[in-house]
Amino acid sequence: MTSTDVREDRAAGLVFPPGFAFGAATAAYQIEGAVDVDGRGPSIWDTFSHTPGKTHLGHTGDVACEHYVRYPQDVALMKDLGLDAYRFSVSWSRILPEGTGRIEQRGVDFYRRLVDELLEAGIDPWLTLYHWDLPQALQDKGGWTDRDTAYRFAEYAGVLYDALGDRVPHWSTLNEPMCSSLLGHMAGQHAPGHTDPVEASRAVHHLLLGHGLAIQTLRDKGADHLGITLNFTPMKAATDSAADLDAARRLDGQQNRMFLVPIVTGEYPADVAEDLTAAGAPLPIEDGDLEIISTPVDWLGVNYYFQSTVRAVSEPTGKQTAFIGGELVADLEPEGPTTTMGWGINPEAFTELLTWISGVAPGLPMFITENGSAWPDQVSADGQVHDPERVDYLLRHLAAMTEAIEAGADVRGYFAWSLLDNYEWARGYDQRFGIVHVDYDTQVRTPKDSARTYADVIRAAKDGV
Ligand code: IFM
Image 1 (cartoon, rainbow, N blue to C red):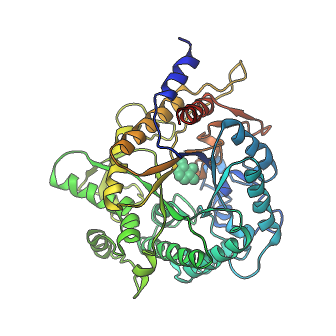
Image 2: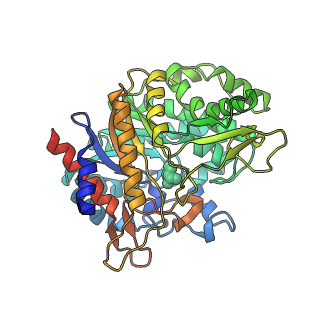
């Protein structure tokens, strides 16, 4: 058997429900480049990435993958791979350079061109309103720590729906609010780069409030396939000791339950709210907020990469963590192989996660809006990019997902992260997550073996129907 046969065989062994959507995902600041054209205003990621010492080798998204001009070629690549769907985000400050008020028509026109190209290629557009790039003008007024930003987000959602609602069927409000709040305001690893628990807790609540307000605005305008994308990191206690179990409970609370539970039940988990209050960083809840936050959605986007193993420690670790009170918790090195991000490979935790979400949010369809892995890919002498680790990661996670589906999880689609190698935030261009390789000197795109494997999976799934 050749390696191609093995690949096709493993691809054909996977069984998906009828109508299952196969896609790939990206985000505006990670791929577009063109940060100062067509009237785009600066975002917090422009500021952060241009601040010395904040990103790997000072890398910025100024050029990235030049998707702003190369999008026709990128859509053609998606078509070649047989993708049904493409998940992308919109740069808020291309549409509203000051974050509010004045609309920049040239920014709107870019996304209309992109969406039209997708529709022409038979690819379903999935639009995310916010993937971390807040207009700097709003940050200058307090950003997500300021309640008004939630209302400005709903304003932006309405403006964009007026412009694209006639051609974009699937709308998501936020991508990974855990990262924008806790990585950005507690760990300081992401824009705006702050390390203040009170700010972090305010950002959590205002992001969720903005989500609910935006859902209401979009619904009022007639949108009917609305969701939010959350990232989940299952937390495993290192031992069964009471202290380790409590550390895992606290981190699971802030990473996973604090975002999902209020959206589906209209209440923050009581233990999480208590932990935050005890840490001097209470959630700034006002009357009626939780009704807004729990405005019904039609689907949940699930991003999954790895599982963490945690242990309680009695002395602060001295590490700046993404968790309020998390300095008393050690995040242990994963066992076994890791990706270049240092992340473990835990497909079985993916199956368990999907089953757990089904229990917390019964009846809410899920889409895997991100899943993928970073490896040190290079173009080989044969002109190809051989990425066996990513192929393996992809197939094992698809299998883990289908296992959850067989066990009853209502998962209706999968988006590989990412279509292209791209700007991995504070890790710069050092980390390659794409199924398509990008040479940053020439901007040449080369589909990796994992892209071909994914195409095999998609083909086999369609043939099997
Ligand atoms: O690149 C990011 C993406 O922007 C959000 N989810 C995780 C990915 C990998 O770190």
